[in-house]
Image (cartoon, rainbow, N blue to C red; front, side):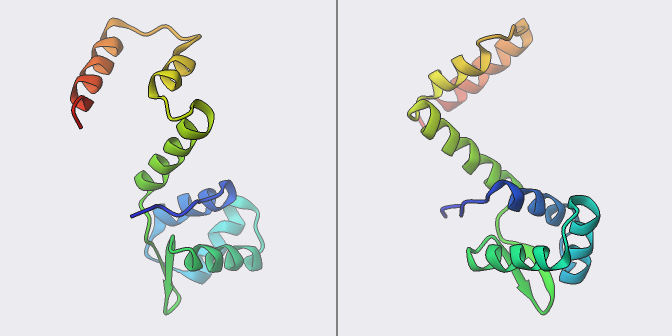
Length: 120
């Protein structure tokens, strides 16, 4: 399944939903007011947009996610690697690690990940 694009403000909304789902839409709108400073109309607009794109479900005023946090994060990383690094994982890792030092343990963990990815 292709994960629909979730924009930054929508992602902040989703983090609240993921922490509290299933949740009544009115309670979710109130949480968005507390945590994001949104008016209820803004929260309901975002709910409607995300429901139309298949990110969430709002059935009988109960809101649930249809996209898991991990799926949204992976889609965002995939888009970043494709957009900024031409799909090159080595270029992405090189840019990420350019100004960082890693321990022997971290290097071993990365090598283990690389070995596990071979031949997929």
